[in-house]
Amino acid sequence: MAGVRRQLGEFIYWSFEPVLPEVGAVFTGRHGGVSEGPFATLNLAFHVGDEEGAVRRNRETVYRHLNLQPGNVVIAEQVHGAAVAVVDRRYAGVGALGPPELPNVDALITAVPGLVLGGLFADCVPVYLYDPVRQVIGLIHAGWRGTAAGIAARAVDVMVRTFGTRPEDCLAAMGPAIGPCCYRVGDDVARAFWSLYGADGCPCLKPAEEGRPPHGTQGRGGPRGEDSSARTGRWRLDLLLANRRWLVAAGLRETRIVDSGLCTACRTDLFFSHRRSGGRTGRCGAFIWLAGGRR
Image 1 (cartoon, rainbow, N blue to C red):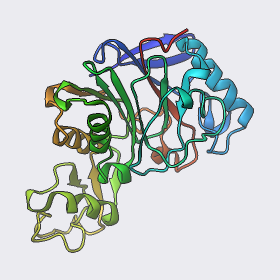
Image 2 (cartoon, one colour):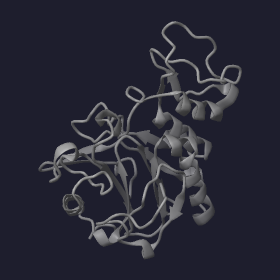
Image 3 (cartoon, rainbow, N blue to C red):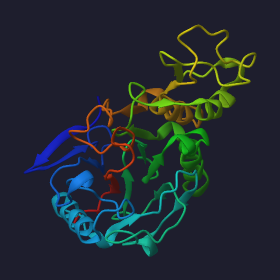
Image 4 (cartoon, rainbow, N blue to C red):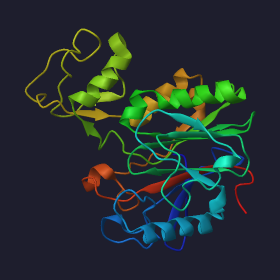
């Protein structure tokens, strides 16, 4: 399991510094803030219906505990897409204490020491990237749409083209996210993943107790046949495995990719889960920075 649990009063977070040396990389839990109701207590998202003042105070709490300057933080508007943006000092402070001003971006890349990349999560996969040779970092928000579109591989490609990164040098960590134990999807989502693998099958997609193949997948790698327990089109999707495969396809070494082993839907005592809450909940935060991001 990657990530070390740390606690400061009621504020709990997970640090990935042991597996991503020389950078700060953290994922916040849901406790230690001032939000109420379904957003209790450390909600970091403005767009979910929480009071703006509470969200701002929560973010200030996180920055204070992590010893980060808000003026160094960049948080984009995540739209479950596959767009990747390279950011520099001009973006410092964008989205740090207010709604994001960097639209339609789900992955951020930088080589600027002191710039803190941030993202908001409640089941989607936070992917932290680090190139220790070129000193480049990335943070990816990978929901099912972004994952199916290969956002993890796209981010690595941007690092290669922009900074000369060699993928085999990179380290990657995946933070708490919904696991296949809890993430059931229908035929529409399943079809998007079957189409990626063809005759090789789709290792990140397994039938649930009542699953059946997406329409039209037989004969191109989908399961063959069905039984009485497989009639409602439900599947278990492993987003962590899917993103791992994209990273490996992009050239990362399998041994340099780790995950937290924590399912957000299983552990709603620790994290917000969009799926488990029925869609009304807060967001945890992921942050990564090169040396110099602290005061």
